[in-house]
Structure formats: structure tokens, C-alpha cells
Length: 357
Image (cartoon, rainbow, N blue to C red; front, side, top):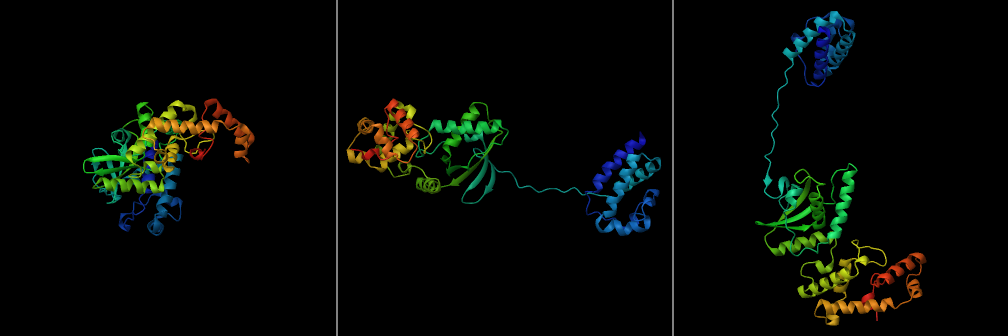
């Protein structure tokens, strides 16, 4: 039992010694001449100085021999191992290093500061704190269905054992005490949905947030525009592009259409025939200057104009639609036309429907 205990101590000692790559004892500090070393000519007392000092190669060899003795349980090695352990305790000194760490900077809303780049700061923010950040008032329209799709995708990845990941970081502006989310509202919406449903732990899951200090609302608008130059946003949603009343008329009209023809609206901006995306529809109405051309003064008038165009498209026969999409699979076109007829909605079948006469 004693030999086994001593052996365990020496195993630990050998592991420890193998980490001390900078330890080189003076020649006067060598241990007594143990018979253990006589097993190897290279490790005899006369040669220890040569092999041991240059790179601790001899020390590793000593460790191997000690381990061999421990496994064999040799009684003669028992005392020698104990003496070696004592020698190591006396001669090996590892100075404790005090690691100097930069003080952690915590923001009351954004959490821990990761990096200050002067023009922006990067924070590691909990989902709980993110939920309290308001969305900039001129941000694009929030689409609940899009946030739900993102939430479903994130949840599926988490259930597969994957880490929580989001494309890019959320972007926030900070103007004195005023803050607002500039980019990432649907990602934030998805995180809120997952937090409310218990999928995410509010304080445990952390997200990177970029915070840009600004001095005026003009700086916020410019920042929003710069962000969306690389990540396009609908023209109608760009700051100062659309007149407020025109934008309101178009947005209300699009919402009324989505309510009436809900089966024909999809979250994707690249949806298949015969579907439409509400923001693509809004942007198309704005780019075509429909409100200005038609002189419509409210959403109801514009809705009637849109439905009139839809009726013109519905009057086309199936052969006309097949000719319009010549080159595509006929069965795919026929299927799209059938769904359009069932729902009496053809705006997704004709990209230039606003100019149909």
C-alpha cells in the first residue's frame, strides 16, 4: 500500500516536472546517487549533468524510469522515489504569476464592452437586455412572419446541438441617453420570440451588438443609409425618400391586400409564382409613382385602382399565361395560374402589372 501511495505521488511529480521546461538546477543541487539511476548508463550520476541540463531530456527519461518502477512496485525504488519527491519539492519553485486584467466595463443596457474602436463600440449583450432596446422610428416595417421564420430556424439549430448564431451583428445608435436599433429588428424579434417561449435563457445567451455614437438625427439617417448600401432595403423605406403621406397610403393599401389575399403573400422577397412579398409590392408602387400618376388621395382609392389591374390580369386565359412564360415548365405555370384563379389574385403573375391596360 505504501509503495502504491508513493507511486501515485511520483506519477503526479513526473507530470509536474514535464511542465517545468525552464527549470535547470545547479550541479550542486543534484540528488543523492540513487541506485535507480544505475539502470541506465546515460542517466548515471556522471552523465546526469550532460543529458539533464540542455533540454530536460534526461528529466523525461528519469520520469519514464520512475513510472516503470511504480508499475513494477519494486521495494528498492520505494525509498528512492520518496527521496526524489522530497528533492523536487525543495528544489523546484514555481512563482505564482499575477495576471493583469483590464477592468470590465459594463453598460447599463448593452452589457460588457468587448472593444472600443472610437467610431463604434462592440458589446456582448444578453438577450434580456436586447429586448429593451427600442427600434428606430424610421426603420423599415416590422414583419412578424419573417421574425417567426428566423425563430424557427434558430430553434431547429439549437435542437440539433448547434450554438446560437446570427448573421452579422445587431446595429444600434447612441445619441446621449437616446438609443435605437438600426439594423437587425427581425433578428431581435426572433430572439424575443425564443426568449418568451423559453427556448433561450434571457441572461445566458449573448449577442454581439455594434453601437455607433451619433450627435443628431441626420447622423442616424446617414448611418442607416450606409448600412443598407451593402444590405439593400426598399427604396420606400430609405430616409427622406418617400413623402410621409404617400408612404402611408401605399403601406395601408398593401396591408389591406395582404389581409384580403393572405394566401398569396410570402415572407421571402424572391417568392415563386403566383405569390408576392408585401415590401416588394410597396416598393413597386412607390417606384412607379402610382400615387402621383393616379392622383389617389387615400388607401381605399389606391386599393380600388390595384384591384382593377388585378381584374385585367384575371381576364387572361391560360394560353396567354403559357405564352408569357414560354421556356418554363408548362406544369409549373399551370399550377401557378390555377392557384391565382382560386384566390382571384394575379399580381404575382405579372411583374409589370402596374402598366397593364
